[in-house]
Length: 339
Image (cartoon, helix red, strand yellow):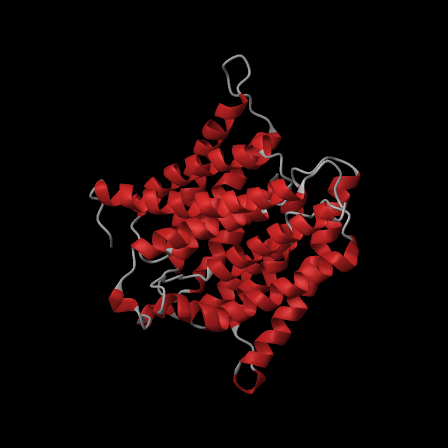
């Protein structure tokens, strides 16, 4: 529980301090949203698991509340610097409500396997945030903003978030796995996937940058994509090679996404993804969902159905996009001013 808690409050908070004029708000608002989100998460997730009309509290439910908060913090990254605290608080309440419904659909109705939540947290949070960012698009920022970049010390603070997230990601992916062999396997698979992802991210960053230099945005974010991508099949019998293959592919697509896809989203699709959550959580989350479909089809997990895995991935992305669109339109109807 403590490892996941550290990821939520320190990992996500400091990861977003890379903006040179938004460091205090990144950490401060992250803490506010997380504190509100975990309380609301306990309530809305507990609604589906009432005992004699009451919500029972235990460590597992507290971990799941932190998980629900993670979706909001991922979406927060897509709209960082473009929303007011009041808008973000409203988004937190509405997003966690939609998240709880999608989680119930995926886990209880479809009975899909997603122990590390590549689909229900990462893909969901990313595309929910991108849907909000699309509605909040500002034509004047099409070619970027002076404050959108980073400076030396802001990159250094962001690396603190990266290191904390990287170290504790095996705990994140194994937190709700069945105790024993499944939990051990989730730790091992995440461990190897993250390691392979780092090597891939550094290599591709050096390849695509001028004179082989490394881009700190790639190092801060793409090195974590392996943890995202291996989440769905973390407790499945994919072996170290399978985990490393997933991490390798995740590192490549994430780095390439930051370099080439993010500018295209802004200029062609009118989606200003401030922190590049599409590259760290969106595409790796979909990769994780696809890996889960393949792994279940190959028998890496007993009791699963690749059809239900595919349905879970589709529902998570679709509900996120629809939910994000409705959320931002609801905020606009409340006449909450945009900064």
